[in-house]
Amino acid sequence: MKITTNSSRKELLRSVMNADMSEPEFISVLDEDLDLLRQFFSYYKCAIMEIETKFRVLNEQFSLDGESNPIEFIQSRMKSYGSIYRKISAKNIPPKLEAIEQEINDIAGVRVVCSFIQDIYRLADCFLSQDDIFLIERKDYIDSPKPNGYRSLHLIVAVPIFLENEKRMVKVEVQLRTIAMDFWASLEHKLRYKKDLPQEKLELLSGGLKECADESARWDDRMQEIKNMLEE
Image 1 (cartoon, helix red, strand yellow):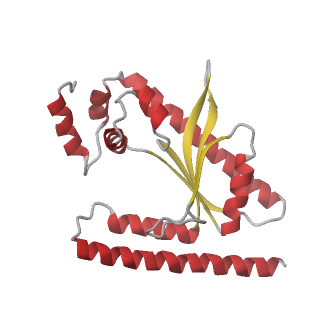
Image 2 (cartoon, rainbow, N blue to C red):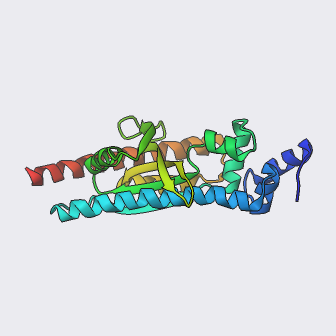
Image 3 (spheres, rainbow, N blue to C red):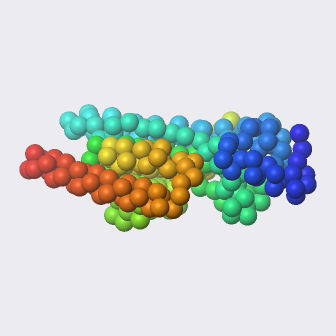
């Protein structure tokens, strides 16, 4: 299936604004070979495995040192075809794999959920000190939360993956959160996702969610204080 006209591309964009794209639709937009597309995404899957392994090793090391494991759980995801297409359309990125690789940093994502706030920064420091991890961008939404109350530490990194005949650097977005941050973000996404709400109700929802975010932040701070007291 080929989509070549501007009108058909616009029609496809409208069709995916509130739905995901199928693999054939995404291939058609990019006009790429299926094997090439699958190989492209396999690089990101390999990069996710590399990042996950690094954090699991760190978690194991801390437990061997007699400390409690700082990581509660690790999740990973690949950005969907529809999400990538909406992003390249919104940012006027050419629909080519080379441009997508260059311009989009969060095709692969790893989320590390920690017990306490200090665990986040300690893990991040250990992770970034490794000589095969290259930091591209760091955004600290814990120190400076988003206006809606969202908190997390975001790292865009490049990690090498070793293939049969080459080494490739692949970008991955790493998010580090506490349990409270992850709980709030997960529920906030469910409440907001694809909701076509009137402005009055949207403002009420936003205010309530911000109050919950502030309360969860107080819980994080208090739990960290208690932990520090126990360790003194």
